[in-house]
Image (cartoon, rainbow, N blue to C red; front, side):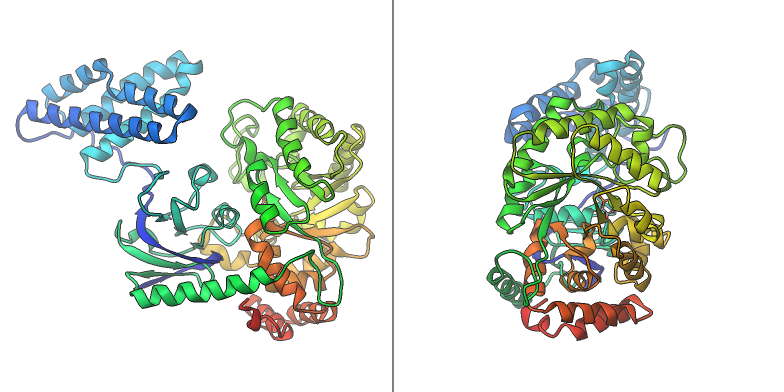
Length: 556
Ligand code: PEP
Ligand code: MG
């Protein structure tokens, strides 16, 4: 059996399925048990002890700060007062899982009403409660295992950055999600980690936990219980492609010498190594909000300075484009909440709009950036997300200039900005097109909804037209840092449209470098023209491929 989806991170992953359960359902109110009260109590105590021991063991494996946090959680699970409460409810006829659920509820209320530090422990209690209820009801414990005897294929409805942030290639063989499109953060993170991924795979969460699957992140397929030969053949294909990619080295550009700097998208200093290993010539998008996704309080200026400097130091001669915090919608930051209710967060206060509400946070970030760049040879460029008007662009540029930040640019993610790039050009030093959001807003299709992935396809001719408009003839350099740049075929088309630099997740760099090096600028232009002459995304892709003759030989 094969489950089909959209391949968003190439490579072959083979391993047992781990299905991430969204949350453990609440046991029914009034649930009772059959049998003796003492047996039911023993069942509850055993479950609590199992959870405590598991948390402790994870802590020992993780070490450091995580060890203390998990040890404290284990203590909560072993709290004698909690056991007394559970026993009392069981004595009244309540089933163990409901007794555990309600007893944790009482503690939770106490903590929440205490507020502050104690109030924040409520989430830890919920986690222990869910784990214990899962044990009692025979379900998989919630959460993503961060250690494994053998790398597993993580299957989920969707993955939040927080779910995957702590995982590594040694633990996860591949990601498969039912939701998510090519530009979702599952896709971006998977590429950043170099883990194969398939999104929009309908029915994937129905796979039996533990069953072995073969994930082809280029073809977008998940084969259940593949034969040994099939696995071996898939690995050989993937290795041949890897070899072709390793052969392409040096700065990016077409075969006739038109330079196209190839830059990396980063979420923090931890990704610098992969960027350098894949030959990044600089950084085209430093997503600074990724540094602070789990924070309740704004980061201090000093810690920001350290995180920015670490990346600037890694690229002494290159340029480093740092994006100011893009908070809101799919990347909420607890310390920058939206004002009032937002039925459509993607259309609400996000990106630069958030800084209109919290100007002091922008001031702190820009100050930290200016300090971080002091005395370093890297070329720092600062960029604002979600800009729609000239007024916004001017406000941002002036704030940068006031701090001596000499290169200030904006992302083009909103159709209004693409349509009026000529006007914006007068207010900024450079542009970078965020094709993920530009597709989302052009097609009114939420990038997190897998069912709409066809509408987020950057090959849509309407999107290609907007990119052509944004590149324009306004004299300002225009790069692409959305995931469209990571598609080696589309990358050639973008260069043909006049895009100056391409920035992508580090593992995508070699394929793009190989694709570009195999073609002349004239061929790229012809491919762009052929793609825009089509009326469908599939037609545009096919026409571009036909105009780029070396792709097949390179296995791209
Ligand atoms: C984009 O929208 O294309 C982009 C690069 O920004 P992000 O994916 O972080 O929203
Ligand atoms: Mg964006």
